[in-house]
Image: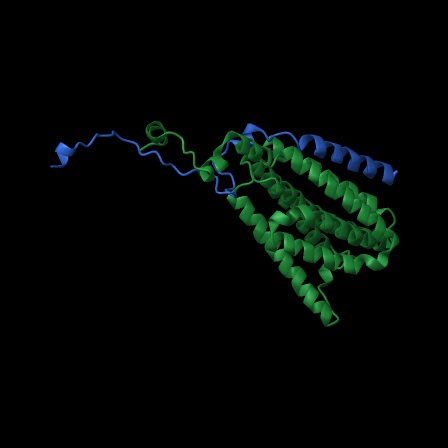
Length: 249
Length: 61
């Protein structure tokens, strides 16, 4: 029996448990609570502003960088694995903590290479804007194979980071990752990492676009903005390292 | 000079991001069959094609 014939035969239910969920008032409320492109972009703006505020603090109080890095890392894990719906409260704190970390790290690079910070900031936002244009125009089309390639590449890069991190406990490390290593191999590796970080921006754009299109819940705006911030922060750090390597030659 | 060029690049890029980000992607991007299926967007097809036959009690017998 089709839905319409059921309504014709039995009429609409007066049961409050059913009417509460399907009456027009509650439906219009849920429509207002859906994810939009505007919302996600505005929230990214808020997170960027918080990140810059944090960077100002980190630049002036460099001793805060490691506590901020650890707090930011924990907040990122909580947002990703524990509860994405809490991104509304965890994402701003993450942006602030990572901003403090970035401010301190940038100060360290800036003391070694004059003017590196503005170059890295310009290139990071330049890549963001150009890839957004490529994505919106349909020049780059993220598919399942594209996603597989990016995720596999990022997995390999993080394995490399992990090995380097563990080696660091024994007083050594992977010299290719060192910012002062100006060899062609090291610069090539950094360019590869920057490429993968840039391509993962495309996945973030597609996530936000699809979420808005499918009418996902409002908190996904914060989650989309958060994922964009994670990628932007990673991209900025890798560009800093790449410029440092190129200047060390 | 370094600061002016890269500063202008950053500001221009942010301007593009905040304006273009709010615009829906092109049809070339959205109307594709090979898009990433993140939110289970393949709608279940409940329509069964074919002719319907009314079954009467007399037919059952």
